[in-house]
Length: 510
Ligand code: GLU
Image 1 (spheres, helix red, strand yellow):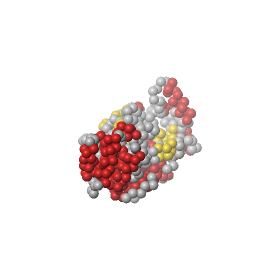
Image 2 (tube, helix red, strand yellow):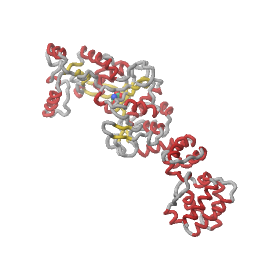
Image 3 (cartoon, helix red, strand yellow):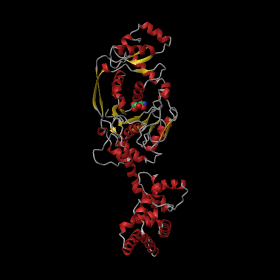
C-alpha cells in the first residue's frame, strides 16, 4: 500500500443533477489527491440505464469546473491512460463479465434463475416467519432456484437455453469480516448479516457492487471515498476483493458522514426550503419537471461554496474558517473528518459568501455589477462604479444586492422614507438642510472630511444637534434611512449632485 500512487476517483451516477453532497465527496477526494501529488479521476457509473438522465453527465462536468475541482483524468479529462471511464463502455468490452466468471470459477459466485414472483414469494415466506430483514443469503438461497441447489446438468441446460439469470455473490454463513475505514476506524460485521448481492444482472449489466470494484482495481484507485449510505455494502465489497484474490489492490475506504438538515433531524433533502440552493448550478429535471436553483445563479462565489462545503464534516483543528483551495489542499486530512452527520447552516453559507465578497477588489465587483446596471439601463464610469462597490459591499452578502442597496448612487430619489420625514422634518431641521446646502455650495474641496466638518459647523450654527439631522440629511440624498458611511456617500455623489438633491428635497418635502 505504502508504495501505491495516490489515485482517487469521483464516481457519480448520471441519474440527475449533482447535489451539494456529491460535490463535497468530489471535493474531499480532490483535496486528498492534490495534497499527496496524486490523481483525481472522474468515472461515470451509468450501468443503471433505467435511471439514466440526459444532460446529467454534462452537468457534473460543468459543476466540477465551476467549483475548481477539476479531474486530471477521466470522462472529458486527461490522456485516457485508463480509458474508457464510462461503465456502459467498459461493459461492452466484457470487462465485468470476465471478473464475474472468475468468481464463479472460484466457487464464490453462482447463477440464480429465480423469477420476480419467486423472489417475492420468498420475501413473503420469510416475513411470515418473522424474519426481520428478509434477504437472499446463505440460508434462504437453499430454497431457491440457483446453481447451488439445482443439479449440474439442469443448470447447464438452463444456461444453454439462455434462461434469464443473475450472478450472485456466495457469502459464507458465519464469518467475521473486518475492514478499516480511515474515518470510522475498524468496522467488524458477521457475514450472517450480509446478503448474496447480485453482481451481474440478467441483462448482462454489472451492478454497482461488481462494477466499482472492477474499475477501482483496473484504474488503480488507492482510496475510495463515498457517502455513508455505502457503508452497509462495504463488507460485501471486502469479500469480493478477497475472492478475486485482489485484497492487496483494495483501496482504503473513507465513508463520509451525511449532511443533515439545519435542525439536525434527518438527511438534508434536495427539496430543502431554507432558500439556499442544494445544487451547484441551476438544474431542471425533465422527468419530474422540477427545477432547482444553483449556487452559481444565486450569486454565490465558487470559492465561498467550496469553502462552506469543506467545513461540512471536516475541521482544520484550529479556529480558521476561511480557506482558499490551496490552503484546503494543505490542511486537509480524512482523520479530521467527523464520523457523525454535519448540520447544514444556511446563515453560515451566506456568511461565507459575504466574507469572499469583502475580499474581492472593487474592480472585480464592478465587473459583476456593471452587467446588472446595464440591465437597468444605467451607464456609469468604471471608476464611479468601483467606488459604489467599495461603499455598498460592507452591508451585502451578494453582488445582486448592490442595486437594491445602492441604486440611489445612479438615480436621484423620487420618494423619501416617510417615517423619517414624519419624525424628523420640522422647521428647525428644514432650516438646517437649507443652510447646509448653501454652505456646501461654497466648498472648494468636497471630500468626506471637508463635508463632514461643514455639516457639523452648520448644525452648531443653526442650533441643532448633528445627530438629530443626520438621518434626515441622508434621506434627502438617497431617499432611504440606511446605507453606507454618510460622508463617503456625499463625497462620491459630488458637489453638484448633492446640492441638486438637497434642493429638490427641500422643494418636494415642504
Ligand atoms: N455511483 C455511486 C454513487 O453515485 C458511487 C459510489 C462510489 O463512489 O463508490 O453513489
